[in-house]
Length: 124
Image 1 (cartoon, rainbow, N blue to C red):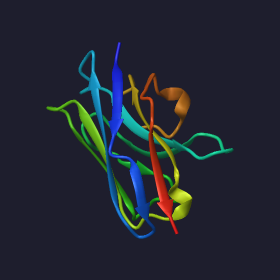
Image 2: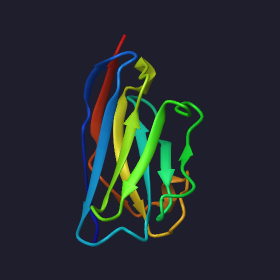
Image 3: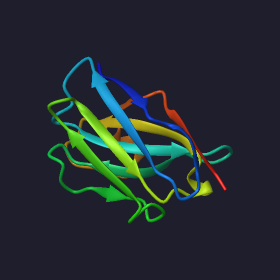
């Protein structure tokens, strides 16, 4: 079983930056694809970014391309999401997810493990 814990959320002004971190425990996730999703109030959970087991094939939602970056450190069993030029519409609970498939996916149903989420609030 894999446990995922997110950190780094908070309140930031529009145009600012935040760095989210996700650390896995229970077993190594070095062979897993990792992803970030978010859910805003009254909206469905949506894909934000994903990365394959070896750091290749990073994928981003169109809404965050050019502003967000995803990276992983397999030695630390962790993945990070660097969020720059934040906008009020980025406000949401952000979830880290791990997929037993090795290659990144945009589909939530392909992810097997989920964190509890961390709140990101961007003020205008």
